[in-house]
Length: 483
Ligand code: FRU
Image (cartoon, rainbow, N blue to C red):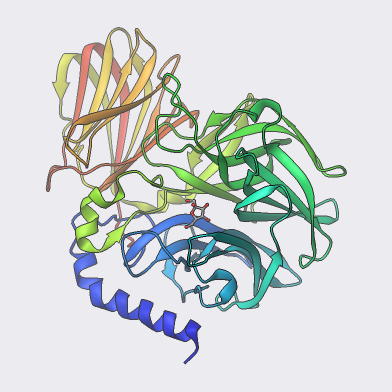
């Protein structure tokens, strides 16, 4: 048996062995992409190809921890219902023996080309990194072509997560990198045929420009056109917290600028975080056949007390965010849940005009463990307004301070922790609650908060509180279980 077959069999066995335990978890999500067993991290190879959406993911089937990653694979026709496909990549070859790390996919001559990082560590723990290619004619089975990029000069072996696109007759690749003087950077490479790549130089960071003092490593870069500007998304490591900013262990965000495909240069503005919650990292986007720019993120952050999640006892860990459509509005990236998610709605809408006057209310018919809420025409005339979810998470808007806060009971020690951002005026909230996650889109997607949280079993409550007077129009839908 080949190493690849051995690894596949071992992973299948693991899925079968733990299926009942995984499915018995009350915190198993109803409509978010999760691993069948083990740990999931970054979205990879995200693409719509011949009408079908393909989302690959970093997968460790053998434990709820990190290690020699596989590429797992889900496919979908509608962004709502997903099929778990055969494993796309196993770390079976010398150039990827410690993991088929993150990467991307593009279509070329009717085939799917997947670029990923072959992670290799020797006995002393020294790292090597190869950018590898695998080609598929059915989107399911991949033929490995081996390394196509060796480490260019000027970087440490922290060089990974290739994202490839075609522009102006050439192919480009951005890679997350660390320069030899230990600065986070995005490297740019160029190719005419997808097999031979030339290193153009540092595209952003690397101790130069606006991102000169900006951490020691950039992961998962993604450069794309949005509303006529070139947006660079990446996940920097090593930023110090600064007021309400950069509160998680690592960040994920973007700069907006102009990419010159002739000379490979990029001028850009300041960095903004994409999400203000506790759990968001390593996002990847694609342009679908309708021309929408759609993002998936990993709903976690590396090195963040992972083993304390209660799902670990059920032999699985982490999930994706919902798919989000991106728009550029006044130089900022807005995120909204894709319209297809209306297909999750089950039963009739519950609609209420809510008026709170110095009180806490539960609204008749408005509770659940998996639901969508829309609060529109919100008017927090004075003081603060709060929504408590399942007794374990709270959204609070202070009209005096103009600050929006997400609080949750920590899954590590039960102590309440918070994340915040400035919101000049709270107008609307679009909220997706799953058994153990919440995603909040504020003011048409201008601000987003994402988090896992763990309500007490059977606590389906939603409690609205106003310190003074708050009014809004409320809509609520129950959402279907698709996983
Ligand atoms: C980001 C990341 C990537 C790497 C992958 C390994 O979460 O560290 O840089 O390719 O995860 O699973």
